[in-house]
Image (cartoon, rainbow, N blue to C red; front, side, top):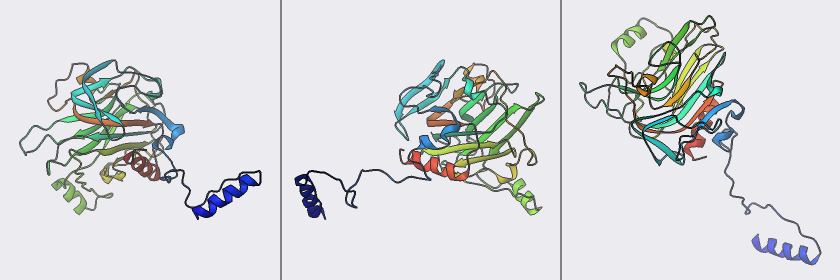
Length: 310
């Protein structure tokens, strides 16, 4: 085939014109799309509010915002490029206008590498956020926080993931809830299932301790449904995913609001008094915030594209 192409090319030159061929053995080294996208940057691109690539600095790319305070942070090889490595540390930011969510939905996506610190039943159990959005009357959680918990020990590599929110209802009062995976079936869950509770409780062991994992939280304002996903798979307890009986409840952050990577506001401000509340020891990469609840197909595509370094 190549000999034929060379001959044809020479013939074309002697004839006074040149044409090119795109035969099967020609390649432009392009990769096939995943979920219809060539890169993670294309997923829900019009709805992206904020993006932290964390490639050697803490800059948020959409706004250009940089941390106002950095504690215990260094830069290491990440899931995609570099990542921030925190040792009881955090990156604190000022208010980013695009993240003052009002009357909407949200998706928060990131990669995390954390370990379960509760390696024995009587060991210390604490909670550290991957990212939080401070603001409002809840002094600890603020508007929203995505946590890696060490509660519910099953094995040392089991991590309990949790997202908790406390945002403003239209009348200005607080609307709160969470999305969480249980690493094992507790007796009260077993009893609820036996009594016919619907939807039923489920446990997801989620053995991601010490390895990179894609963590994603969604809140859909049209149904007040929450979802928590790890590596593209939904792991949230289905019994707790409906937060307003299926009725609309738009998310509106209390303002002023500001993001913190690796800590809650009380820790970042030095006002924390709770033993469970710690700054993060672990690594975080590729944080994205969208103004919509991503559908499963886009969640899968985002995970697969970033896992492939795209």
